[in-house]
Amino acid sequence: MANSVYTINRGINKAIEFKGLKAQYIWYFGAGIMILLILFGLMYLIGIPSFLCVGITLLAGTGLVYKLYGMSNKYGEHGMMKAIAQRSIPKLVKSNSRRIFIKSKTKDYGKNAS
Image (cartoon, rainbow, N blue to C red; front, side, top):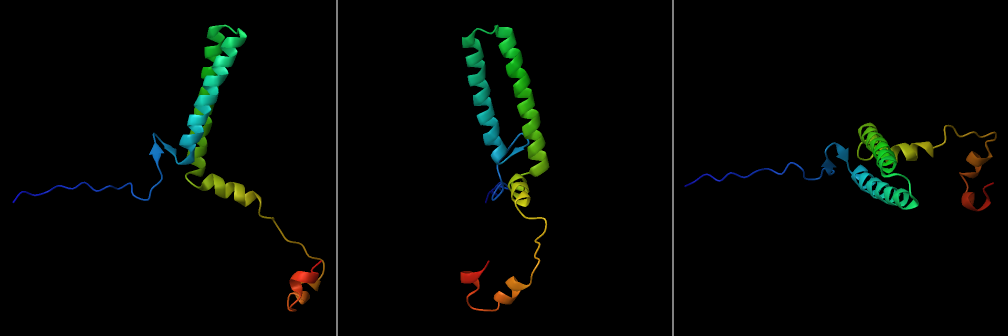
């Protein structure tokens, strides 16, 4: 009997990755390329010289790639969402009275809280 060789798919339950860009950054890259294409078309229609249009688009594209790869490496798959959520958490909760804690023991806490 011949031996069968099966390859193992090691990409199960992992985020998609394309040349180092992880997860949502691939979509950001695609949207950025589309915006750059529209920007180039608008500059060309306005009458800006072609070499200047190409130069501006290449410069903006280089900045886009640099920024996206930096964010992908810094935050990873879910890190940017976690960083945004972290900003909404208060640094400290300040209370000058004990009334809120005393009222929390009663049944009408949610109705008369001030």
